[in-house]
Image (cartoon, rainbow, N blue to C red; front, top):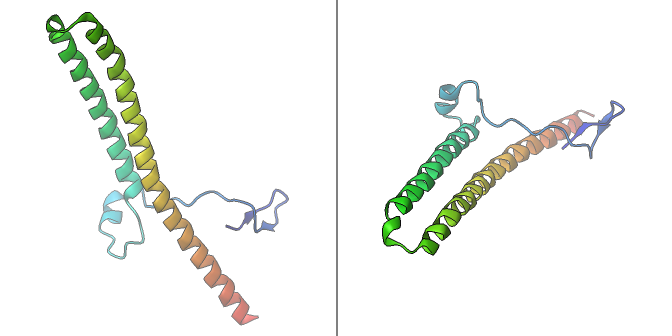
Length: 131
């Protein structure tokens, strides 16, 4: 990607800011964009992450409550093990969810970058034809 060098000139190897895929300001306009030029995935990924965090927290809390309720029928070592492993398991699931959603976002960022590269190459070819 072509960016600006620290001295103000054009630098082929300088990295500029990543593109902002999607029109986050107007979700419904992007949703009904039949040309598919705007992506709505970043917003949906954020919503899925919030739902996932809430679901993981509710699941961990429910598991802890169930361990406490059936604690009379379990050996004390198992209760201690459950009280330690449930938060650790919830943390691992949260990390896995985050990595999975970021992996999806990487594909869409690659798509955006490829589109920019294609436009840049087309512009360069057009200017080369003029010269």
